[in-house]
Image (cartoon, rainbow, N blue to C red; front, side, top):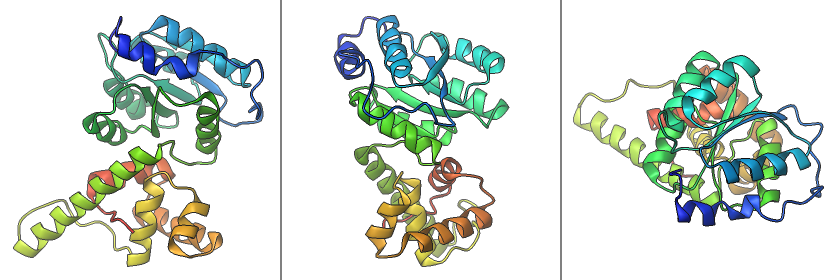
Length: 254
């Protein structure tokens, strides 16, 4: 975010105005409740901190740029970092790469005004667990954070659709290269057509219940396939699935 940006002020308003003293669904039992905030806009930062604390989260620190976020992450070991994309000195994408390389257990969610595809894709490739826009409502933010604690990727429907299109585009490119005998990305582990469908939807942030409804499967079957996918790809969680699928172009629209 650029300091003094009027657009950023407007888009950030939903999260900072009329902060409820007690949201409808407190989150005090969440395993991901220690949060570090990184944003160069002081007014937004203060409002977000007040909102999260009212929701039962512990804000362990605030940073005004990416380097400060890295230093505080080393010192405070938060469960989650809510990270702006555009900050002075060191931007959020660079900070995400540095933090994930050193402390991969920390979940980083980009919280930004940027709707640029390049920022979205680069954030996921850098290891971000999710990507949210600042114009979302407070209760939506709480819902996404609860989902994050369950291993879901915080992504809006619109952004999920963009990721699916990117997955499909990369997959088609790799297929064309293979047919033409051209060098491309190294082949990934073999996945069944059904597993590729599930991979696409899970990587796009859909819940197991939503994946099951989309593919007309039981939720138990979806969870079984996800376990198989994680095992075959040697991944630990859904956040790694998103990054892997985007890098390798393994996912297709179901």
